Length: 107
Ligand SMILES: [Zn+2]
Image 1 (spheres, rainbow, N blue to C red):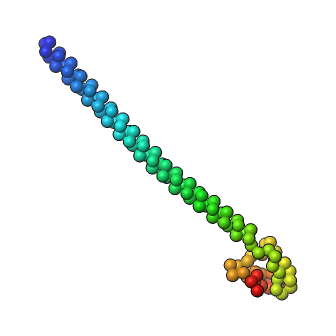
Image 2: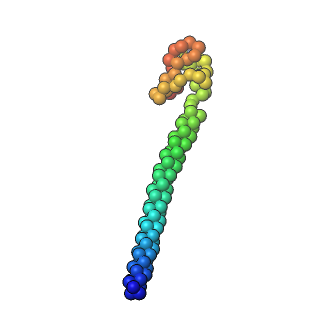
Image 3: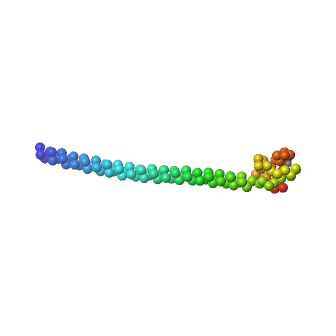
């Protein structure tokens, strides 16, 4: 009886140690997982921030190009100034808001 309870004690001890080891292993894996996940989230954040920065850059460039739009041009036909609302095509054509004729800012 005594030796049996002694064996029982040893078995209990082994089980507790195994459980302890299992907990350590699980904990280590969890830590690794958290680390990996946080790194993935980090790179995900980087990508998002990159995209936002690009978007901001593009918006700024758009504003600059809007700002650089020619304002001091006059209609070739009637001499009216190019209005703020008149569209200028990429090739520089614009429609006069007074005489509705086409002029070109490069001409
Ligand atoms: Zn005109």
